[in-house]
Length: 242
Image 1 (cartoon, one colour):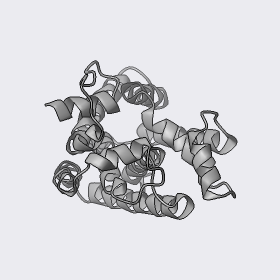
Image 2 (cartoon, one colour):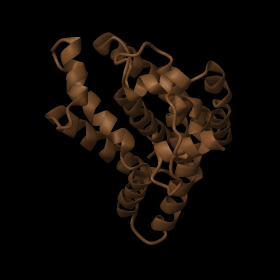
Image 3 (cartoon, helix red, strand yellow):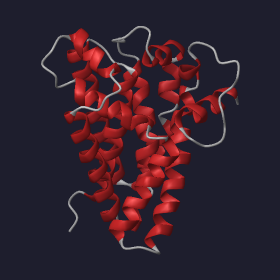
Image 4 (tube, one colour):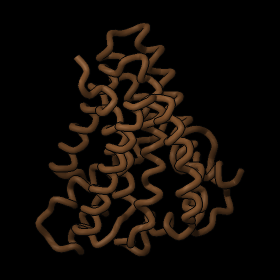
């Protein structure tokens, strides 16, 4: 239960709290539970989406649902997304890119990246058919699972949060925790399988880009992967409609 509490304490704003006797690598040792956290977050967001759509038009309901989603996670991964959007495209040295990742100021690319992802998520939620509402849960669970294999890659910054996560991470956790997102994709049928495959491709591409531009992954890169894969899954579930 300690690892479960650690996972919820790190990834959500739910009043769980972190163990007081935290040790180095605890975030990685709790990795098995990350998709479970995503399942709970996604479930709460899904219920909010259903309820809000009973009260408001789809666009307003989707924006408010997204606000709930961000509130439950504290915008944790959005920070990584913005930092990576500023750092990865920059035509500078690897060392300078790593400095940009640590810079608390939001740059132009970071702001644009945030706007694009938030608009894409809101638009996807507004057009998501009720039959694919479970896709919200899939997005949240799969996004948090996909950072596990990414964290097995070389670390760009030895002393960062990503390195601490990788320290406690075990390959068995990567494999065993895949059961939940795979099960959710199965329930959603062919479209769920396509969405999960698209998310895998996106995560792989972003991890590869980070290894080229940063010589490894960081905690910010993992945040980028969560946000990007959540968005890809939602968009995949509405693709080809209308």
